[in-house]
Each structure stands twice: as structure tokens, then as C-alpha cells.
Image (tube, rainbow, N blue to C red):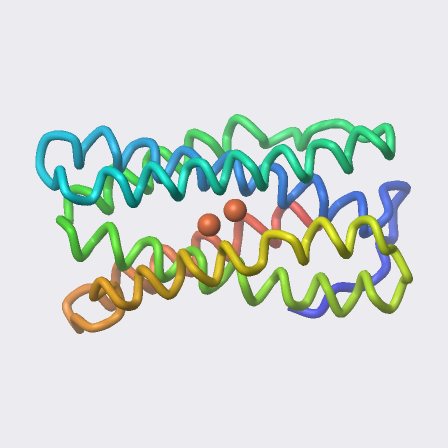
Length: 179
Ligand SMILES: [Fe+2]
Ligand SMILES: [Fe+2]
């Protein structure tokens, strides 16, 4: 999705920050619910998922600091994103280890595409602070996506419908937030 100037009173950089902030709440809750499940069924995954949650909390704080410095407020759907994330994490866990990794791969792939488009837009607007905030999380998200890939999240064709569903859902949540 190409990012463009906003047509209402909230400018696009502010929208990007608020959507990313809410998205991080979603991500935190995806990994939290997967951790709850993994503590019983896939114990070896717990340390990895816990490290992901720490990254996502850090990302959330980065966006929140930048929102505050612009006198912004949190996204109206902040808690809804958290709830949606939690549900998606649970569904992926029910599909097993591969489901968890497929979810990670799909969510993070969509997120990374958006982050890259956001960087192009923010660079064109010379919004250095927002640019740096987005840029600072990119490497972590690439690491999450690649871990999902390396752990088999992309390899099994049976999970293709699930990956597609997760991608579409993530894409629509981001677009809805940016509207
Ligand atoms: Fe994140
Ligand atoms: Fe992530």
C-alpha cells in the first residue's frame, strides 16, 4: 500500500504512529497467547516467543514516546487490536507448532511491507523522528519473519489458507486504521 497525505485533520505521520502503536499491542498479544499455549504443549518454543514479546513491547514504547511528543492519543481500536491479536495467537496455537510459525511469518511479512512503504513516505516528508522510529524496529520484525520462515512457517502447503487468512486480516486492520 502506498502511503499518501491524509485528507482529514490527523496527518499521515500521526496516523502511521498510532496504527503502528496499536499494531504492536496486537503483536504483543499474539505472542502472549501463543506463550500460554506453548507452556503446556510446546515448551521449547517459550523462550523464543518471550523474546518476541520483549521486542514488541519495546516497539510499542518507541511509538508511544513519539505519539506523546506530538500530543497524540492512542488509536481508538488499541484494545481491539490486542483482543484480535490474542484470538489470532490462540487459533494459530490450535494449529500446532507450524501454525504458530505460519502466523508469525504471515503477520510479520505484511507488517514489513507496510514499514517499508511508511519509510518511503516519511522520507519524502522529511519527518526524521517518525522515520527513525519506524526504521528502528525494522530489523527486529525481519528477524521475527525469518524465524517464522526457518521454523517451517512457510513450508507446508496445508497451512496456506491459514497464512492467507492471517495476511488478509492483518492487511485489513492496518488499512482500516489508516483510513
Ligand atoms: Fe513489533
Ligand atoms: Fe514482530
